[in-house]
Image 1 (spheres, helix red, strand yellow):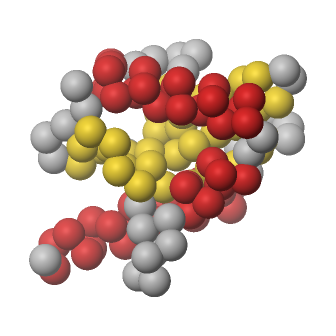
Image 2 (image 1 turned 90 degrees about the vertical axis):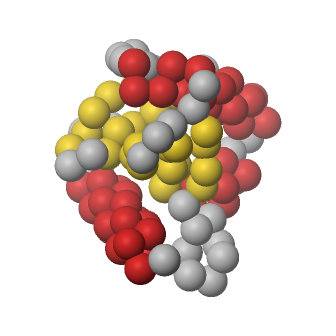
Image 3 (image 1 turned 120 degrees about the vertical axis):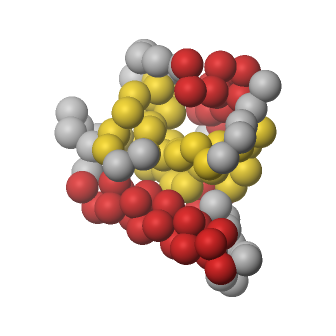
Length: 116
């Protein structure tokens, strides 16, 4: 079993938590169900539920009633997974700015972890 944590900004805000809380109840329930799958299967979870993006980043893939939600995450030592940010997908291609933001959060997390 893997452990899930949310990336937190220096001010304590958690972008992925804010995103999840902004979703309607049905999509939020679907997201939490997918997070449970990620907890159970971790790095062996594959498409259609999870997909490698780049540079150690993955996306959790959730679809419900025609809406598509993505949540980025990465693995750290042991069995820990950090969820960074999420977005509602409007077209076929994942927006570069969302990937870049997830990469920034991953890099910041790793830098902070090295300094602790």
